[in-house]
Length: 248
Image (cartoon, rainbow, N blue to C red; front, side):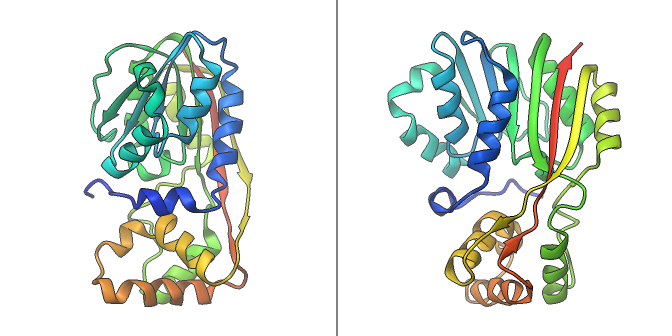
């Protein structure tokens, strides 16, 4: 699949649980303040901004595949760009970083990457020995109700696009990539929205951007509306895969 180009402005305007997920993942890094941190799938820079506040003597490497996301990041952090290395890259392929990282953060990105074994090897290669890896993504059971609604409308449930891994396979892949102190959890975290415009904007921008880009413009809004109407409640049934590990 070609890299997804996001509608970054709409994305950032929505009531995203990603904000809470990012803050909690950053807290798990337990930063001292002088580290170099790779923000893998940095989006519009919300988490990078939090990281910079905790790294008065550190540096952030902000990596994403979407030019629109990185454009918004540059605007958000215009006064602090001297403390950030911004990279547009496809992490499904090997990526060369300008320096080794003391920690890697990834929020709401892993489930878009088809080969987690390869990703974890790349993360390990980016980290110095002993460096921390903390991630938050969609996991096994994620969006089960939403995917049923999507399947009822389109005949497909996103399995060809999303990679929602479970605890055992994730822990095994991390161990194979050379990680230790591995802690992997699945946590249900449903997000309630307002039915109507807010719910449909969320679905179109956050969940179905990949599917909608293949539809003619005139068909996109009716498609999203049909999926939203199939949901029993205006709730996105997230199940989060939470990862904490250390490079051996």
